[in-house]
Length: 77
Image (cartoon, rainbow, N blue to C red):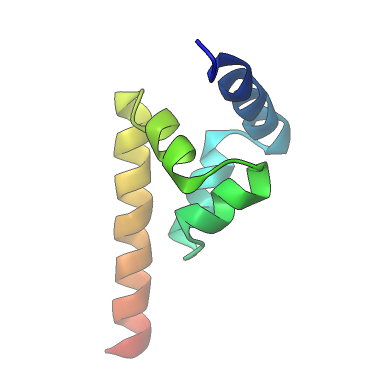
């Protein structure tokens, strides 16, 4: 698979940066998936596909987005 070396590098980079927990903390703080992906040198679509390969990552991503939504409501309303 052509994307496998990129996938392996991204997974290694995420681990080196603090793991998926840190990625989802960034989401929960309002950082876009596009910005996070760019920080790792991949497209938003590639990062999204990698997240969606694992049900636990999907759950954590959705929870992070939910937390960001709550933060927005608390600060605006």
